[in-house]
Image 1: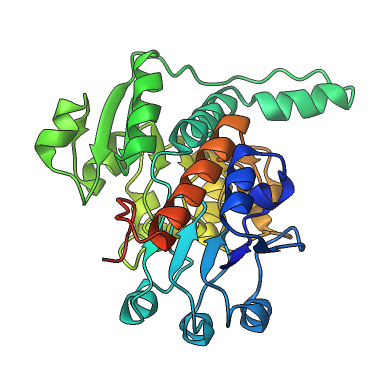
Image 2: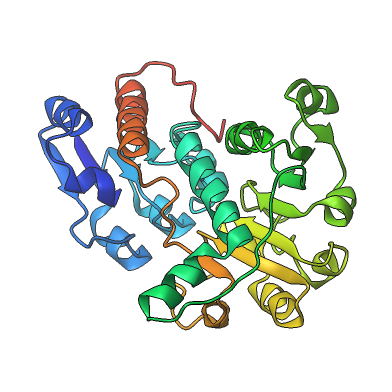
Amino acid sequence: MKILVTAASLCKNENSDAMKRLRAFSDDLILNGHGRPMTEDELLEIIEDVDGYIAGTDTITAKVIEKAKKLKVISRYGAGVDSVDLAAAKAKGIPVTNTPGANSQAVAELAFGHMLTLARKSEYQSKMLQDGVWVNVIGKQLQGKTLGIIGYGNIGRRFAKMARGLDMRILAYDPFLSKEFIEANQAECCTLDEIYAQADVITVHLPLTDLSRHMINREAIAKMKDGVILINTARGGILDEEAVYEGIESGKVWGVGLDAYEKEPPMGSKLFHHDNVVATPHAGAHTNEAVENMANMSVDNLITILSGKECSCIVNR
């Protein structure tokens, strides 16, 4: 069987257990040598006779799926599947899998770190001190403050667990979860408007859909408390970056922590002109532990389906 592997972290780690298992399963592997997500044109050149595909964040269009004459599975290396045309894959009978929970702790820890960094403006102070400037900056304490979590899945709940160590009040909104589930997991079930009105810190952990795209926009920011901290380690399109920039300019927004962007890489973003923006390059899942978890799960999913067995991680049934 011919297997295409485009997830850069997996391709780079030839000696991992996951790659060893993959090579034992197939002696015909195509590895992504670009060190970045592959383009539609690049995929079209090689996808036609591929049987299985372990995908990074490549944009897998209906055109690519149509060209894939032998493809039996798209195994996403990661939890997000918004880069895959799920309807086109389903119409062609190609299951799409993901790795839910594999990187949850890593992403939650990065988001939590952004919150701490922004509250104390520690990244700005570090830069100034390294430049030889001794500054006197007043930050915020987080103990007892109100945290709004938009998306109370694995990552949101892990963030909440850490925040409870600071005695933060936890508000949660999730359109996919019941009030009973949210409350059983130690959060107050709230509407978006209630979170906007009450939260000192708002962190987003939703997939990118038509409903969540530009959810944090001018209207939403206007409803928020003055001095709010915003964090997005989910998907770039959830925040309207122009509206967020205006919120920082006006002083409405105290600081913004970003790990995902509307355009990646986000070169030339106006947001980077501000000292109260903490930005990382979509690195939420980049820990040794998360990389190993995603590698093993994505390989397991691929081998399971190509072996004709039932897989529990199919997202387009």
